[in-house]
Image (cartoon, rainbow, N blue to C red; front, side):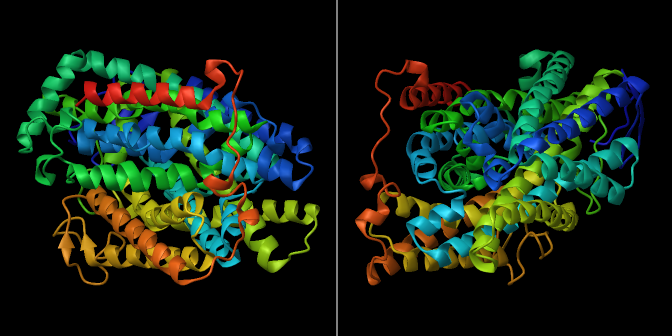
Length: 586
């Protein structure tokens, strides 16, 4: 997969480890306009950030469609753009499961059932909701683990941008880390959450503009959809898994029959339930966008509206990886670098295709789209980090009587600290040849056990603060133990990929290991929360739980609203369309 190729567009120099591009002045102009616009948004919004609510919550004043694009844009960072393309090459069309069972059902669920709790309780963050529902120690535990997860995710985006700039422009890796962090710092420090959301909206359109031509040109080169399926079929046979790269469900009966190395139960339970619902329902990064909406109905519609483009995004972010595999199978020249460990670096699929197909001018647009995704990924996580740290750690434990002006100052300072920690985390991400593998690993430690607590807390009023806290603790420790006892392959060295307690089991892939770790962490948290709750006294009365537990919360009414303004109606339509997609690509 490392054959050298001659570019049909922009000037390219290739080697076994790089995809060096020689950008024309027009490409630099496109990049410069983007960066000027990004920084300008933050500067223009600076004068509007007068209170901590303005900075951390956008004053809860944004319309549903802006919040929806910000909702999907916050999740459309480097992890998705490069990670899903990498997974498309590594796992084939089964990567679509991250969308059609791993995102859409949970997005509909959070809009219909969970936003009334978040928005109605006036909680400023997910950890603050946990305090209202359970107690202070549960909030504190989640705030610490979530803060760690956000800076780690931000570090993944920072690492992805650095390896991209290193590979295609020959820039120094360390300089790329510093520059990317500085740019994000400027527009988040000045414009807060509103700046991040508006840049996420901009980035959404840039991704479509930059990636749609790439997919069209790639499909045309490979012989259309039929040509792609033919080449993927040949590639699947060469790997001893006939048809596995071109079908989503039909090879999930046996872990050895598909490249993801997981059977249908591990996929449906680990990804479709635990990781999916754990991410979309509890991750403050995305929930924060919906909570910025102007009213309850807009907040509920935000994730459901976002689900519409989300279900179509596999065509933009997964197909490039599948096209890359098909091109190599067909004998086409495509340069993919090799990682220090000797593995193919699937993270560089998109840059390799951009180099192959885009002429100067379009080259600048393609690179801008990639950079936008990296900036969005970093900014989204940093805004979530500074909100949680300021409200749930600083204001709760360090200075409970802090004024609003002081909270605003601390939030801006925390933005700086968050980016510095993210830079450190970027170096750990260098160990993985697919950043989606690493991202799901992080989610398994934090979101999987957290979902168990949320599920019980919202739908079982008997659950207690002691049960929630120790359930989270046991679930997190279970994830650590599982990771320390397993490895994604017999030849993998113990370390950040697992096995540091002594490998007792080997999975067929990192993704399979992540799915099963999430299942064990969720189950341990869920069961221990039930047992401990039954053994302890409830610490909240029914009056204190109103608006926080489903059975004690008044259900939002949409009587008289048009069908497109009713969250339940929209959700049913979205789920029906997703079911059709699963059947079509079975």
